[in-house]
Image (tube, rainbow, N blue to C red; front, top):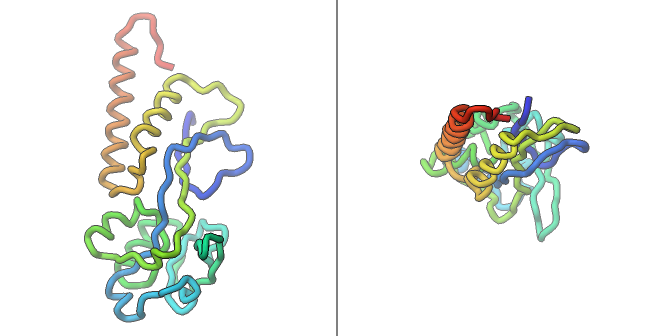
Length: 193
């Protein structure tokens, strides 16, 4: 593997990576859920709500918010846990509870009104999107070109747009790489590395 994309709050020690973008986190729920259970006004109220949590989170039973500029953990009741943000979003749309997910996962549902953001006054640390490389190895030119392209296309917050735009950016990236490969291949004596 030459490169991997990792979306995480932080990297493991020893990872060789370049940050290409960030994605804001949003707490969302279906309007019907909020109408039935009320909208939390403070993260401390989450313990009284049904929450949908990531199993991959190191602390799946609490969510961290900035309160008065300082990070604080608040306990949640995880009615459902999954390792897929898309699955948690679908459960939230179905009215199962609140979920905390990256904005690139919830953007379309927010725009369509299938979920509403809540607790916006209490920010959550953004996730970083990294290009992770194998350690202790020369980085081929094609990988440096790809990382520059990713930073250019996704570094300005495209991950916080809709998934459709992210998918388009990824398609554009693949087309650019294929074009670059074809141009290099057409030149005699030039290898694409």
